[in-house]
Amino acid sequence: KPHPDVATTYNNIGSVYDSMGKYPEALAEYKKALNVYLAVYGTEKPHPDVATTKKKNRLIVPKNGEVLGGSRGIQKGTQDEIGGVRHGETPS
Image (cartoon, rainbow, N blue to C red; front, side, top):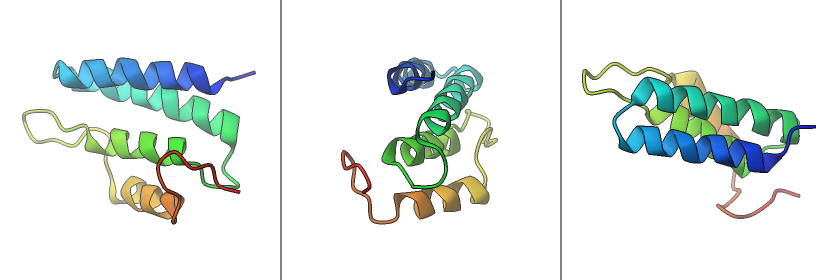
């Protein structure tokens, strides 16, 4: 069964790649994290971990300015999923 700690690890690895400027690698790790979070939390109720990971996917922009993982759909989905849930809160 998927565990959220695995997704957190993927997110952390993605953050390291992001800080190193290795954007394709960061995006791949963020996508892995998103897949695990979705497997754990599902899509019925919004969860802040899912929204945060979608936001990270959207923010990966290499130096040439091409957006690798972003789209208005992901951005809108992130905003919709946050829907009043504050960082650190678990939706009821």
